[in-house]
Image (cartoon, rainbow, N blue to C red; front, side, top):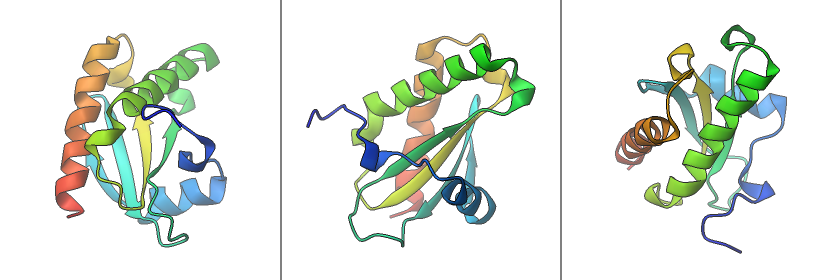
Length: 121
């Protein structure tokens, strides 16, 4: 498997998982995104799992999909900065993310990942 890939077992796809993390997880706010995270107690695989969300208030489907693609790509390129501990993270795009470059989003996501890794230690 490629080190920068994003395989299915690393994705959060079920709405129950999204709800559980968004309601019960710790929240970290960046400039352009928020992250909700919890240690994953469901499985002992030790794999970090990630989901991405963008609410309808951000714009039409084209805009929301673009924002989610940027978040997924930024995470995919920087996931090695987060130690593999079995953490489940949901990244939520904020309205401030609209019109930002991929580099700005990636820089913000790096800071959020650093905060998660230090607070989960």
